[in-house]
Length: 415
Image 1 (spheres, rainbow, N blue to C red):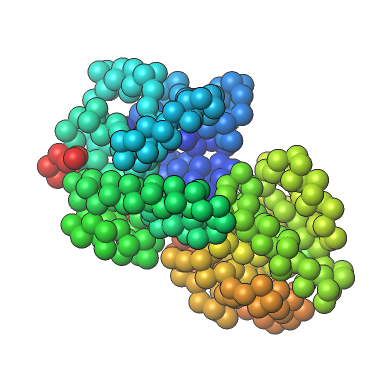
Image 2: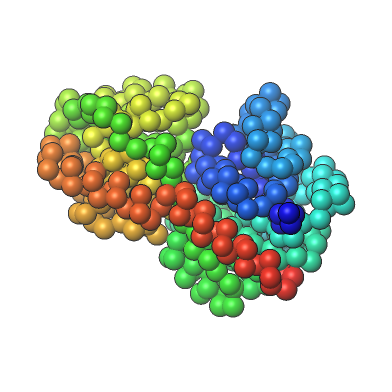
């Protein structure tokens, strides 16, 4: 029997447990690629994902059931030291390199990567973010594919527009320019740039016209997330997402300050559940809002989702595509989203989603879903359909496996 091709998978964050969009996406892709490849995973770990050594070891152990080999995870140095974080920012300003070039600089990771390369020569490299571009010179001359979970420069500019402090806004725009320049210089030389949506693919090709792209959208496990017959709760609204993610935090503040008061004024029986990890002080503040309960981290979001009559996605800052919408669709849930929240998805206003951007319009749409059973059923049915036909993991996985199989017959790549 011929040996299976070997894939080196570099990740900027250890993708377990899958409590954030990026971690869930990365874990799903690992699970799909292992059907065709022997995978060697070399990854960093982040404090938000693995807050202590025990959590890091548990994630390391769990991922060894997914990949053929998993190197010991490497903590990100500047998450351990405020001095190192400041030093990384200073070097970025002085040299003009993106901050991430220094954020992921560590001899520990270098040693672990070189050890793997000495003993387990890959046929193909998957780099899970362009943030890891500093490691490109260390990689062998084989085809290299890079995932873009969003267009980082566009995301930074969107964030900068919502920052009031002029110096911070200037720094974010400075960094956006540097990140954009890296994409322009490097992406055309990669074997493949894996994009979340055609919208993002077009944006990358506008920045780097010769960059080869593949749209491999985020997917959802339509067998895990599916309608289960649980009775919904009248007036129940749900938001899913950890607020250590800035786009989610901004969305929750927008929801609680400008949208939810309008909903509650019209329907005192309505209730909102916030699902996802929050700082303790924030959770207490959220809980003081009338009708709001912050559930924090829950190991299984399905019971809380099943009770919802409406899932709301008031995202104002973001890129890529939202797993929270795909999972809600798969569960057969009606969704109300901003245009940025559902950007890049097969979202059709009035058919599988309601798309609104102004606070009063979002509130009215939520109330419409809560009150109109016919509309709600229409959105639920069509959402489940598009999740099954377009975004199931098996469909997404087959697409990326086929693309990577073709890369094995291409000449080596890499800047």
